[in-house]
Length: 317
Image 1 (cartoon, rainbow, N blue to C red):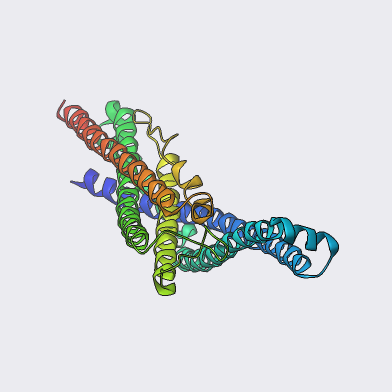
Image 2 (image 1 turned 120 degrees about the horizontal axis):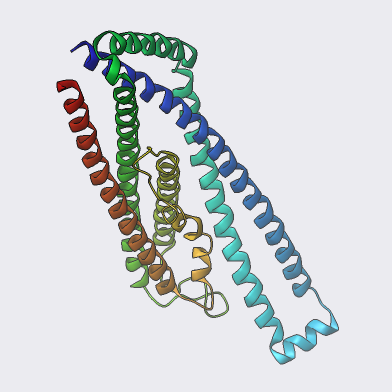
């Protein structure tokens, strides 16, 4: 009974230390994502200002512009630039939304980190390890080394299960948000064929502005949910045990590309159906990733049972 309590206390301390480590890693990760969002805002704003400047020049009189008007080229140039400008405006808005959400996430990480006293935990762990070592030397000296190895593997596996569970929950939440985005895109598609000021593109002729805003909001909610899912997957990727390694090379790639160009799907060349197809593909990716997590979850549970059986067998000898 004493050994089990010592093991339980050790697992609790390691869980807290792992939490602190994860939060520190997430802090760095989110800070990088915030920098990326800020760069996107700056780059897209520079590109948008450039297009605005070119449009102003097109509006001014010149013989070349007059010739282009006669040949219809000016309208084509203006339509192309307005379409690009509209996409950039959407990307800037999305980057601002991401920046706001990520900043809130970073604040929560700082708060949680401040609540953990790592130095005290390390001191408690050292004392506990000394107690465990003394117990094994007293009660099972010939079995001490293997029992210590099994205890460590058991602890790591339980920590891994926590990471997998958190990733599964984040994946389920991302699926919910993706479903809402898909439904909103489907609804928007029913209004009319998308159009622009000059034929084809961002502005739908009969689509209400509030419906468009709602769709953008759902897309953003899906994106930030995917980003958080990816961050949880990175935690799973960092966890492994000696005999139960988690291969996650394919786990964290789908979120990297999802919304990078999704707003371009509302351009003159590809209508809203392209965006719907893109969302559908990512839904499949998330489903497959969750299935793989569930498979690892099952294997980790089985591994825990194997460890327990070996531990029981040693203690009964």
